[in-house]
Image 1 (tube, rainbow over the protein chains, first blue to last red):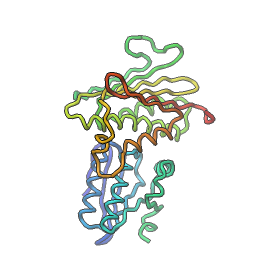
Image 2: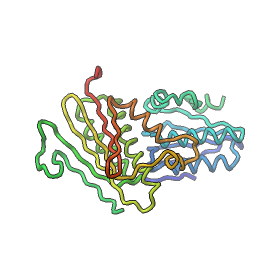
Image 3: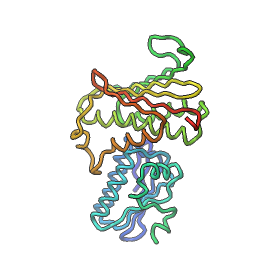
Image 4: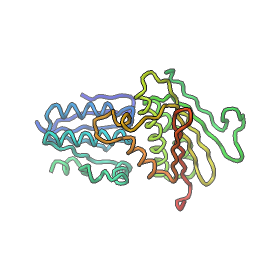
Length: 116
Length: 160
């Protein structure tokens, strides 16, 4: 079931028993980040092994959102899983690049590539 | 928290003039709360969008201002019951946009700043790094009465 507030919609999808996708749409900032944090933690608690976060429709991502994603990478790793980022728009890719976080995140152009 | 937002263009309080010494001024006051940071970004989009900046430059300015506001909002989150505000003042000049983001939130020591969150690093530090990268000049000062002022400058020419 999707969860949403005024500026961010998060829709989980199951690809198989161990793999889920979170489709994000909108802005990830200090206002909406708690929603994303909760959705990621729900997947961690559910024992998901591969979590893909699809960023294709993300219009804005700030340090708060980056922090949530870093936390998600860490939590997934702690339970032997992976969190991969999919299809970031050029603007978001640029943020990963200039902050050096492209060395921490696994970023893939498509879901198929992220699942390979 | 009343949630009041005040926006004025070219008329800083007390001046009554649309332009001061050739500089147009836009001011915005928002409550120091997460739901209003988007309002600040929208206003900055309106200001920077008509100054000849590229799309990427406008987005850089928007993100930098958002980070400055977020810093204040996150500090305010550590002070229960605080009724704080953020004043944003934009000076529009042909060669540059200067934005001051001023709050009245008490500053914290490093331990308190890092107390929240599970990410094991400071999103505030990441926000500060982003500001440094995204605009041409950044100055952050602690105000005598408590609070912080971030001064961001972005030049309209690429070779600034």
